[in-house]
Amino acid sequence: NDELFKNVISHAKEYGFVFQSSEIYDGLSAVYDYGQNGAELKNNIKTYWWKSMVQMHENIVGIDAAIFMHPTTWKASGHVDGFNDPMIDNKDSKKRYRADQLIEDKIARYEKDGKTEKAAQLQTAMDEALKADNLTALRDLIVEHEIVCPVSGTRNWTDVRQFNLMFSTQMGAVADDADVIYLRPETAQGIFVNYLNVQKTGRMKIPFGIAQIGKAFRNEVIARQFIMRMREFEQMEMQFFVRPGSEMEWYDYWKQTRLKWHKALGTASEKYRFHDHTKLAHYANAAVDIEFQFPFGFKEVEGIHSRTDFDLSQHQKFSGKKIQYFDPEINQNYVPYVIETSIGLDRMFLLTLINAYEEQDLSEGDKKDSRVVLRLHPCLAPVKAAILPLTKKDGLPEKAREIMDRLKLDHNIIYEEKDSIGKRYRRQDAIGTPFCITVDHQSLQDNTVTIRHRDTMEQERVEIAQLDRIIGDRVSW
Ligand code: ATP
Image (tube, rainbow, N blue to C red; front, side, top):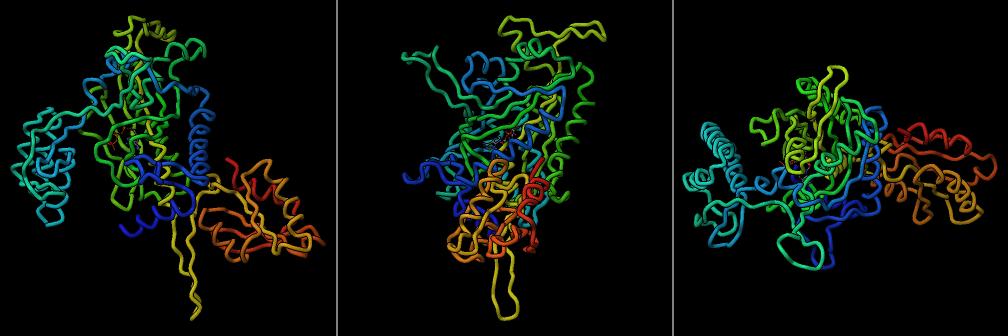
């Protein structure tokens, strides 16, 4: 599995999906850039989400709020005081770790060594310490279980301290405390502070939702596993406003609806599971993660949270503006309750890549052959079809260009004439292109081409006039 994950990471780089940020300067930790194919795949995932959330739900609208927000937003939301990770430093290596992560690694170690009872005990003790925000107890566990620094190998630890995950910067020319603003650590607050604007201008009636896709920033101290945990990442969030008392019904609805969204891409059901939270965030009365089986274990891709009226009430209190909804059906004013669905775009991207990646052995007898193919859902594939003239002469390139010029109006198509046809097929397999269209001498005579299907590698002869329909049928939403 480690091997598979490593291969996916190098494949992502080799084929222009993901690059390390500022690589020529040796990179910036936990920050990544999306390349020519990555940007397309990412856009397609966004489109799939936006269409199924906004376009398919009459009562959900989308917005695009700014990353910078009034600093009071983050006081009201609880992020200034509460968005912390418990950190501990090793005095010898001068390395900083998340205390809970060190303990989790130890739990995994116990489990590996068959000490399941010890593992369970430590887990319970850690959960209790985290729940009570008891930093001394966390440190005691690290000492008691003789956890050593992975770098220095020593047990020379500092106290555990809280470390805020928000990035801050200054607005304007004066570096005064009052001018400190934060880069948003979640997109949700942009929706909450616009609740009244959207509800009024859109004449929205409860239940209704507001969706948004955008960047979020967290100063994650340990960044692991490629684009799983980044310092700059993207979220696709939807806040659904409901009548108080109906939140559990909607919580269940969104839990099921979001899982269906994942499965509709054709991913095997057993790769997904729900994980209910036992430790709830300060704003939530129920929370569940949708987890995917990554090569390094089941991990969260999306969270569904019942956020009560916490955020809207806080903004009402801090802003002094009345955030109420008059519900004509029950003739009452109230602050709506909120169910949130929050998915990390980058994690969804990684999931998609891992799930699609396949190394295939195509050897026949003594003839060794293999390929790497990305079995992406055609709707998500960065390139929908490649147009390949068999040779560079006899008017084949011109004919191929003619086809290209027509198809590119509707789809992302590429044209390639370099290298043997077999090599060109392999390159398209590696980026997940569902169709390769080969133009040969016969094409000049009867206006037909061969179309090769990525997954089966089967080829068929079709009329050029049919290409639009054949491709459109597979790649349209
Ligand atoms: P984790 O426990 O993994 O840190 P979280 O519970 O803090 O995640 P949420 O605050 O619920 O995450 O954010 C919603 C989604 O945003 C997550 O399900 C995840 O897909 C994504 N996400 C959160 N933090 C990061 C990050 N640092 N890098 C990439 N994606 C992230």
